Picture (cartoon, helix red, strand yellow):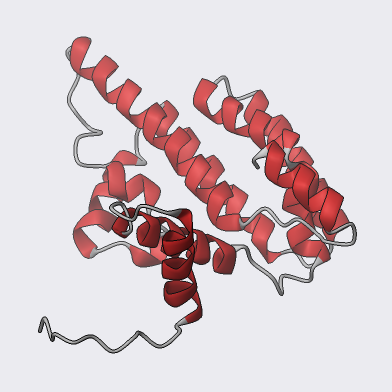
Length: 199
């Protein structure tokens, strides 16, 4: 999480509980798995092996319940091989058990054991993900301390809406006009009556 953001929250909201959203953790892991898959696919092609990882990206990144029939068959074929990509996929699926815990203590215990297992896996992108998870461990466990009731999804949505509004306001000459535009977009304030209709 961005350090200046954490400093501002610590200074102005002393009782606030920072929660690292599970969406970010899963997205970061998916990037690591995709990096493993892409590197291994290139290596297999260079060594002259059959391109078993071709068109397997979504099979390895999607949840098993969201796979199409074709993707399910492709995943089954890929899982027969002893590849780093397959081991990374299995570690990803094991990581999903974390979200089933209710107690922060048990979630922390599971997380620590899973991190140790990944560090012994010799899969460098996954090890990099574990280093990130360890550095944000407490923020991740705050999700369980808040009894899974809160998510930073609302804040992410507001940030995205603010970015889009500011991009639309590119031609505005003063910050005050940009600020008014943000108030209208984020607060759904009524638009002023225009003399011309553009639609």
